[in-house]
Length: 279
Image 1 (cartoon, rainbow, N blue to C red):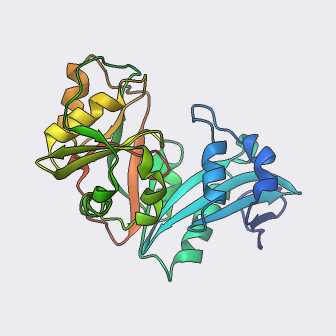
Image 2: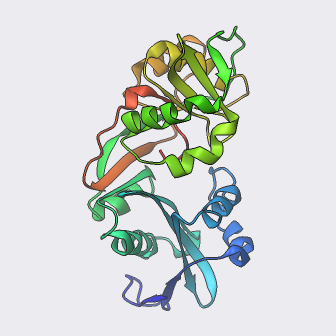
């Protein structure tokens, strides 16, 4: 438990940072930010996985903020930095993020996050550097024939998925992916895995080593009405979406940012991000 009593507002009582538990979920639900998807499934996910470091900020025994660090070997994704509106602009989001980084500084050499327009200045003060923008597209779906090369998950390709994911993302996250693979779809050509889709988790992560595999898996992912989100460097995915009647929603802004050691990754091979909490 950590007390913070040097926040910018002199009238603000002490803020206490402590781990949150399942008993805190009803109070955390009240922090639901406007424009975000339901935060409760993510909070339950963090509670159920010991590689997630969870923090709540409390003032007078009331939860006013949260933050999570999702640890993948020597890097961590900072996520769920939420501050109750009446307590914003008082340094709480900064304090939570700084606490997470300091807590893991000996374990992790890189920290990543996806910043909203509101949060970006806070992270810049913590020396986070911009690593490109995510583009949000209007909701929609397409109805086109699916490739015969797409199959449901087969365990024989499990290690190939891990290798491809590491090659593209630079993240060692086998522990995250493995429980989700039963609902995956694979793009297999000549008995070789060239792409995969994690259906039913987040926004439907798509990793593919070539444009054909990537766009074919996008077709499957977009059979349901979704809001596609791709990094600005994936020109193939952007052109595919524009060709099929989607348009960029310029009212939404999200920046991938990092501090510490820069992670080498290949955004042109990510045809659908996992979510705002994991890139």
